[in-house]
Length: 300
Ligand SMILES: *Cc1c(COP(=O)(O)O)cnc(C)c1O
Image (cartoon, rainbow, N blue to C red):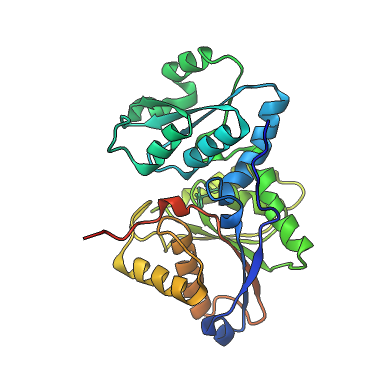
């Protein structure tokens, strides 16, 4: 396998902001968005040990699932091409065409084999007959779940904390955006405290989903799940969120997108302004990447 050229450990930087100074908190940012332009952020963290396991098992094909805008599909397609491993993406509900999402066009351009299934078939996924017959046609394939989250993914995410401590920073909390909750779970399993900002509406179920992943011994860190910063649901956003992102970008010269990292930082600023954290608290926000999904300004 050709291992892609990755920027690891990812850089850490201190964010200076009058809002943080007023509240007496210190905020660092772990720049996982800089790991690789296409295999960015938590998607590399989650893939790493899955890929190593697949190779050890001599699998020559990586199969996974996602929607038309999945950052996980995007990253896996790029990884597969660079590493010389065949990839297959099973996509819910859309046909590939010139008007497909930029994510799917990218995946196809990187050589990912795409299969489209209906939403009801997709819901059955692993248990469905369609899926089983598909896998039967691909002997030696290694299946990675939707969003890339499984036990092996947690191990990779834990390295965020290792790197941060090697850089001499032991934060009181890690702050992450949460979709499936795998990133939060990986840090909790390492015994770290986590503030997780849910990007989906009614995401209370994440609490149980995250706990389900974590091995109860040794003791995990504490989970602080924030449910109020979803802006209407997954992929939804408002003018207020876009304005916040623009303000953040002009102050810090770091790009955010509106699906994950914009909501995380909006939530983090809001909590800090409300004095949610005691003075002296040290926070490590994780830039989980995802910038290929950034809303582009409409050209007129
Ligand atoms: C997929 C993704 C997440 C969500 O991670 P989970 O482990 O599913 O909670 C967060 N941020 C970005 C940029 C992502 O692409």
